[in-house]
Image (cartoon, rainbow, N blue to C red; front, side, top):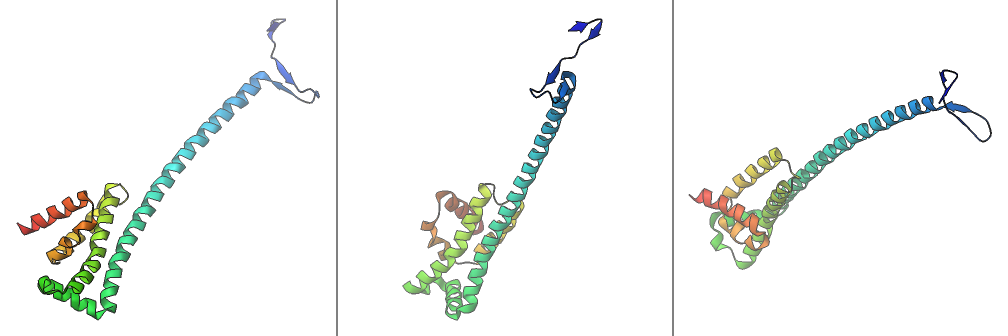
Length: 177
């Protein structure tokens, strides 16, 4: 509102009569506060993205550690149990000569291998295990599978999902031809 040719600026007065704030200054303060809060939101979103990526990296490493520790478990069993080492050699030579209890022990041992492979396969398909890490593990699993008697897979098939069965069967079929 204009008074005597000048623009009169409204003021706010507290009930106690303590301070006066010009409306134009208040709107400037509000504008600055909006800018600061917008920047805070942007910074927060960058932080969330960083933490999400970091969390994914840690999860990927955890998955790899799980797989690696299961393979170490297999090695440790062979080292600590000479009878298991002999059983594996016997199965590799001619798995048809295994007694029923030897076959059961051998399949239980090999189950660790295929179960770890299936876990890695699922982690990869769920986006938890990154492609380059999956490729490394998968190549290793495939090369190890080539050295195992078919019994190790055939005897454990009942333990796995249809999708993983198809995947491993395709690998065996490729290696047979």
